[in-house]
Length: 507
Image (cartoon, rainbow, N blue to C red; front, side, top):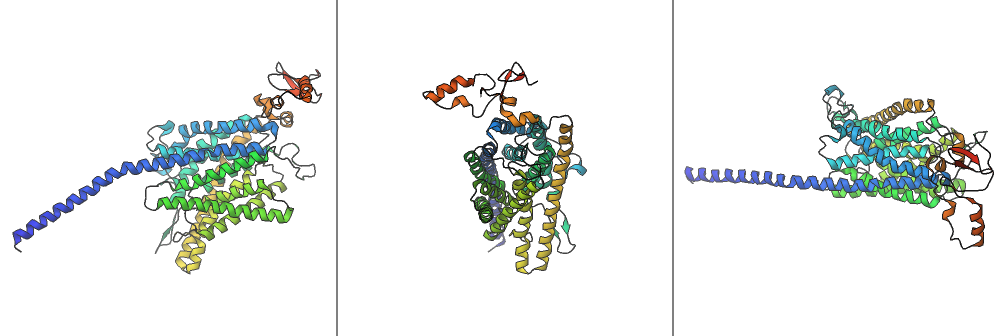
């Protein structure tokens, strides 16, 4: 082969190599918008299912309260999604994911894209909005049947607009201080990070902490505890409604955790989404079965409401690491969540703190245990304590213990921040008398007094053909605000004053 022939072949090879590189760049440029569309559609669809969780919370809470307060709890749940979108759009997203021009402050909060300005990833915005709404919704169950509407408005603005976004920035933003973690060791160093795929801490530990503070500051419902401090039963009016809400929440949690994988276009991530959903369901199942069996042994009853709450606690615990645990890890996570839920639920009663929906036990207990359990069972190298112990690798054990310590520190930071945000606000509302409804309203029911709408108006039942119903019609007071029987212990509103039906003025 002469030199000219060799040079010609080399030039041809270089041109071919350049052409292949150019084709690869063109292919990547072609595939990039397709990947963006796939991810945007995936996040939007998952967010729609998570948005449906608002309906689940509404039914669960409505079934768990007495009939006289159902309209109130439904109104709160309807408005929660509406208030949250305004709060998160105007302020929350900017604090969570906006760039901060002051470098020293960027690990703590964002400071751009307020009021939706310059948002480029709308799929991610929508997905994060429904997470913010869930953090806020948790609280209403803890203060059901006694909270002033002003209280609801305040925390529906405060939590998704300020408390949650700052935590999301800490844990999920690439520049957040919890996400960045710390470096352990000089040689063969290891970098910790905040392990929480779907918000066991950022969403549920935050919401559970605020629920505890709200329930404690508001005090128990009238009649919830005897003068000796013993709990008295206050059962909700509809087990079917509560159960329906629980089933909807179970569906929502599958999207909640599976959707948090976020990038569906990467090779293998479709299977990872399925794995996250299966592990979430397994954690809920083990938590529910464990709790149900213990309750049956102790009380001799099979209870659906306790089972549903335990299942939700297990699914919440799975939020942290459902994408990085094997089957045995779901058993540890689920059973642990069920036991912690039962312990915290009983502790609340012993402390005489009234939480009608067990929001604290479910969300705080499940969220806190999730942040711990992911560091025990994670199959990611150097992240899980138990797998590291099984290998006998001393360096891996040290790394996994460092990761566990960082997640525990993160959970403490979440608790402290959530408490610091709401304590002064709730205290101010209590001082000005806008925190809790008046005792008289609480006893008679919030629906008629605050909303003028009964969830179950008496005149809506029956068909009018029975003789008994004809007699009933004659005894009913027809009134645009309230429809009640002629009973000296009942009341009706007339021209702004409250009177007994026999004419006695209450004012």
